[in-house]
Image (cartoon, rainbow, N blue to C red; front, side, top):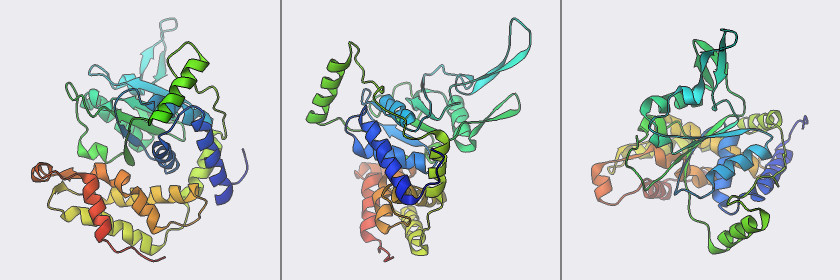
Length: 323
């Protein structure tokens, strides 16, 4: 695992990682792909879907496949920032101050129902996401690398929630919508559970470590160094800029949207074994990267517009570069 990776060998490793994840997480191939792209690009993922669709299982499987750790916290209205980041406390036996690091000190952190925690707790997590470090009593502690937050939201229950402000949603590299599995996938899932144990959950025991965290960071760095043609950059900036003049939107995407498109496109190119980005990479990723950065106006909502529909219209009207 100390080898220097080429684009081809890195792509093969990522295919193997995907195969290992599939041993535990059935179906939802787009979700797995988007999660790996986000992790490769060094970002964070917001997942929206009903409970029980395997989000925690996916995170545990990814962490195991890359040789990392994962931790999960259920966000609730009484959750405190220190429950995420940790704190300084006195050891009863010695009277000395000791540092208790919180669950955010892991490689993959799942924030389940993030919108159920108050703004102060959300802000503590977002600081860790942005800075990749946590300050405890004035001392900065770096988070493990790679580090990714996978936050979930339930789209159906809004009572007692604290919706994420637009500025905080913008911190997520991508947002994906989870769907129910198809009949064949659900039958396979039920069959695996019944055949494996008396419990009600699928296991990640079959997932093997393909990489270690240090090796994955080298692949991340390789993806971040892929060349991007100036025409591709111009295309991404034009798409993001076009969201700022849509009447149905109260606010379009900011410059972070352009950067996110390029970062994710590089990761996708590497996963497909290419050392260059294509316009189709930008098109494929435009909706999951940009939709959550758009704010519909009241008139837009009344007229039945959606962020995804607006992005699809912009893509249809925008000239695709030839590279």
